[in-house]
Image (tube, rainbow, N blue to C red; front, side, top):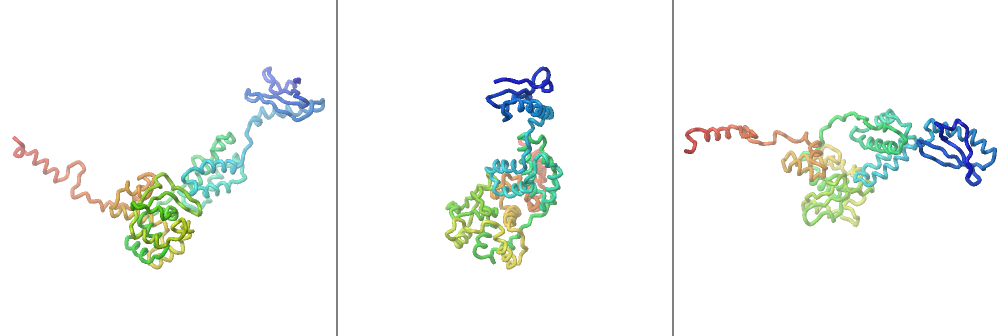
Length: 373
């Protein structure tokens, strides 16, 4: 191997930053970037003409790229490149099946854009364009942050433009739920599959996907429904959180309604695997019962609200029945329906014993006539 020196413009502090040498019949280049040596073939045959090209064109261009930092900058990749890595990383999460369609919408929107061209303004404008509550937009923000953070990790961008983007606070709307007499009307007029669904929904507070994922074998002899899966648009999941895997009690009449609609299908509700497929039946039942038509999810709100209003369970117990990750989640949802007036602490209550009855008792005990000799 023979080494050919390059001109003085390729030297720095007495050391060559780039030079060429011959390996076999080809001309190779050796150069340093951040004190790390690199070797690459030019692909050119070793002859005087090509040597001149290397010395006068290729090496000066290389030196210019080293000086500007372009030589070691990573080529920007598209948003979808990191988007698919993000999907793969999230695929094992419990909530993946319920959120993956939203993630894909984000990836589709920014498809074809290099991540280094996406600005905070681009992200804000996209979020503003979504016709939904800020709470619903959080899933989109999570995707944006996660995808762009992968680009930061890869060294393509230095700052994640999706960080610290604040969404407008939603106006808190009152929970929609049915009164006890309205529930009785709905159950009285419902028939068939709709009847079975509503019996389960109003009496257990289960989520729509959890009910549609039920199999007859989930009704155990111990008197509990063992909830262990969800079903939505053909996708089988295992719940929003670890607490979603739980047991809720069922009554004999509910089981009779379920058995009455049984077919050879693995699932109790057959091919109905999404709330939208219940829309027409639900509307008809509400009209027939002469009650307001709320979202089908309101059956869960009704269960939770009446259980609290009628003091059937505590917040902690309700959290367990609903499959919430913590009682704090339950309290956040249903604080507005807890009726302070219904809490009976007696007349002249005092936590530390300073009510009238306690004070009289303490006064009598302290009176000289009542002291033991």
